[in-house]
Length: 146
Image (cartoon, rainbow, N blue to C red; front, side, top):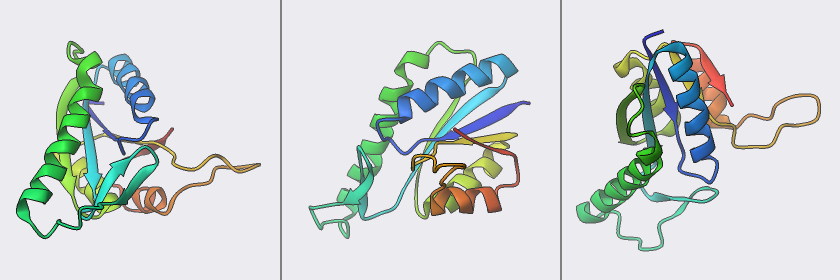
């Protein structure tokens, strides 16, 4: 396995998912790329995404600020892993979340896609978000849901 991609939503669980992903990548001697996809008009919150209260997203500067904020948050999450031999690219994409994750995995040649589960497991099984189900259906590589 040459490359893995972990998709982070910048929620409170992102740091733990990133840590587990780096451990897996290092065990497999693979490069780990990180992606965050955000929908324009929504901003990251501790519970996923919420509306941007500024209502100024038509302004290119507001969009740019949202992009830079997401990139800054990702870079902060990556700090503990700066010296990892598995560290790959850090990518921020605006658009449909599932499509952005799948397309980034293709572009980076990921052999494995790692995503976090947003909803708690149901009794007797796993509850998966619509986005996770779309990624599972559309990804051209195996997907690990943690």
